[in-house]
Length: 332
Image 1 (cartoon, rainbow, N blue to C red):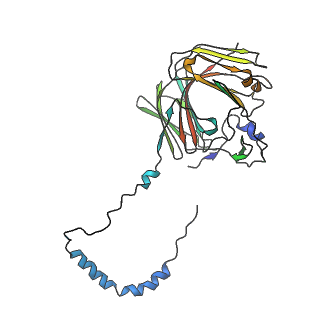
Image 2: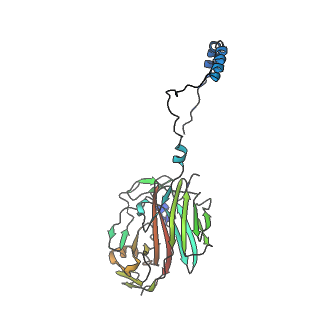
Image 3: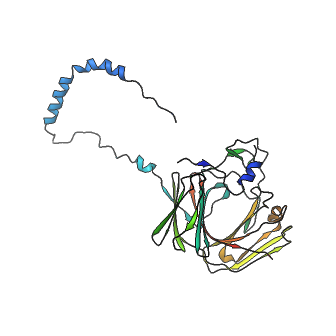
């Protein structure tokens, strides 16, 4: 099934307003050639029949004739079949190459699935402008003004018009828990996949499919609870100078993640993301990564996520899987 064109992400509409502007082989006609040859071959039909009859009764030679061996079976059909890609546990996608996102969220023991798959990454993301041990700050500031872009294009981070991602409408996610499967299909118009999971948790395996891509994610267990969670903000929401978040957990192999967008009145893909090991117990965000986000009505920090990640590289981009629990956090 062909994908549909759909801009992904909650900021797509606002950004679109600001965006810059099979060969058909025909078989040859062989009727005349057949007519010209028919008279020439008619006289030999009787001889051919006689020769065939003799061949049927001829004894087989004691030694096999020197002929080419039978051709190997044609395996092209098998090689053209979709090949399953195994996602790498703990891996993440680089934003500039991400073309798919799957999230399975644990909310007090009820699990909610959301997913979407595009035919290419969104051209808005480049290298982060600022980095620290825990965080990256991304500013959307195209290198030069785009010319007016086509209706199927976006103004990319490089200052050129690029093809907008197309959303697959044949996407499917199958979850497996306790040897029982549950399948979620994409909404046929938008390509979005969503739903409430009825299987018992907390461990699920994933099978993802769209177009010719097939991805397997090994059984993954939901992250445990974060304890003693606290957040502090210096400078206030209007002029933040430092953000600190701390917690404790006994979980192993998890990460704590946050995405802090620019104020929604400004829109655009400018944001700060932080991700650290759950065992680290905390992270800090400095003023340089906060102040550019706190425009108009201030900083819009919402909270953090306790996550197990997995990622799979496909020919069209990277697909990231997040098994997470959200924590909405008031800052003091």
